[in-house]
Structures are given as structure tokens and as C-alpha cells.
Image (cartoon, rainbow, N blue to C red; front, side, top):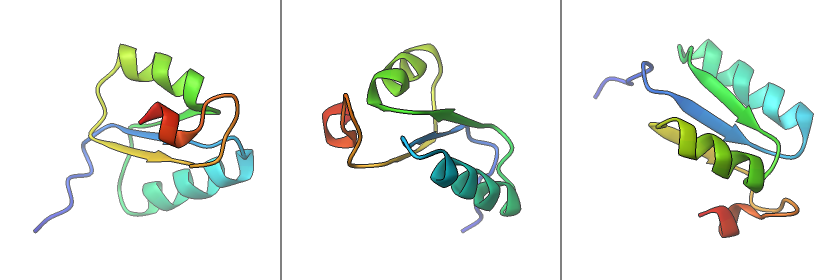
Length: 70
């Protein structure tokens, strides 16, 4: 099964270093459409504006956790 790197990806994390690490890893395997959000509240707004094929979310964030976002 081939990896579809054309899908849009959203990374959600309140730690800037983790956002950078995940973004760089995704770029290395071919993903080009990668967006970021710093917490669940920001991600919720982003998810309302665009469809994503893949979402990576931190679990422990404030003011909205990854679980609450789900």
C-alpha cells in the first residue's frame, strides 16, 4: 500500500519544538501540505475551515486537551 502524501495534515501541540520535529519528519517522507495549531481551541477553528486527511494531536494541552478536541 502506497503512502498518500497529497493529503492535508494538521499537527496540534502546545510545544513549539514538537511541532517543528513532527513537521520536519512529515516533510522527509513527502508531505507538503502541513498546518499547525498550538492548542485544541485553535485546532477546532482550523478544522472548521479546511478538511484534513491526517491529524496529529498532543493529548495534554490547555485550555482544550486533545481528548476534548476529539
